[in-house]
Amino acid sequence: MVVGWNKIKLIDHSTLKARIGWQGLTTAEYLDEGEAFLVTGTDFFNGAIKWNTCHYVDKFRFDQDTNIQLRNGDILITKDGTIGKVAFVEGLSKKATLNSGVFVLRPKKTTYEGRYMYYVLLSDTFSDFLSKLSAGSTITHLYQKDFVTFECEISTDINEQRRIANALSDTDALISVLEKLIDKKCAIRQGAMQELLTGKLRLGGFSGEWVENTLESLCYLITKQTGFDYTATIKPSLANEKRYGYIPFIQNKDFEGEKINFKTDFYVPMEIALQFPKILLDEPCLLVSISGRIGNVAYFNNSELAFVGGAVGVAKFHRSEIAKWVMLYLQSPIGQKMIFANEKAGAQHNLTIEDIRNFIIPCPGMEEQSAIASILADMDAEIDALTTKLNKLRNIKQGMMSELLTGRIRLLEEV
Image (cartoon, rainbow, N blue to C red):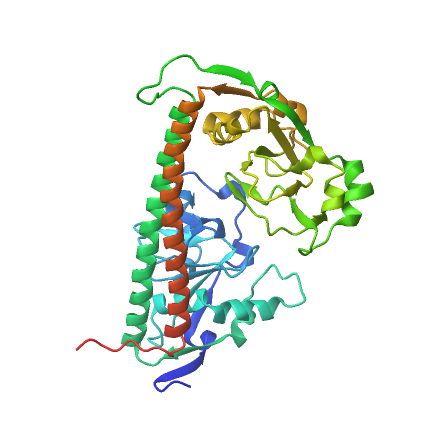
């Protein structure tokens, strides 16, 4: 045990309250406006409450139980459905209460700082506790009695707790700034796609009418793997690890945009793949998700040989250099609208190969295509760089939590 730190049972130093059964709310009582916010687990976002998504309840429901009337500094924990999600209450400027799926946790005295305990509940300590609690079961509820065994180490110095919480909070603020910047850059890119990929905004030096083509007219082949081929020949040959003479089996979860995951769940022998040359990925082409992940498209740049898995349509072009343009157009808002207009509802969302063949693709000249693609690629590179920075910062925060919340690294008081 670190000097100046104690192991405590959280329940001995806290109150843990929730809306009790007879006070339960029906969805008919969820109001679009009312006396008080009604916070549910679906309103948790990145450890905070997204107040603009909350429903409301009337005054009677708010007044029913003073124990669950929220105040700034409260810690909330989901107890139903996705259990163990945590949020810290701040920025609350009006009345708020809880539905029956959320606990509110508060310190009884001054054993711990609320924000400090919030970070403890975000740490591996609480995750491990939940994992042990649900081991070998399909637990979908947390009960007050479950917290009887939850222990954590905390500094006995409330000021040290505040210093730790402030350091982690400052890191969260940096993460939030980056997240908002990435969202802004993504929105700008989306707007640019809408303008540039439809010809509404033309780049300097380019003029002339765009030509509309069906995707089928641009391709010499649009096809997919058949169920019979998969069951009779392909499936029995698959390996779940990379072997000599095997190539990646690309499923619709393995691609998006220009990103292809070649480290897939399955690999197919080259000798089998060669029996199905139409779905062998051996040239730049377009991949389209035709089941489940509707709207997901990718440009396969042929950096490595691969093979089409199920739920994927493949389009091979007369001129392969146009494949990237088609991918960009189908990613744009108007392209996505066209894809989803052809969606077939069922147990899963589906597209047919015939739907894909009939997609209408407006095309400028190749130079204008390249210029537009270059602008969007620069935007992508900027977003990717910011995303890499964000992931590093998140990893730094995890490392800080591991060290600071265990006392392995101490934050000394400034003198």
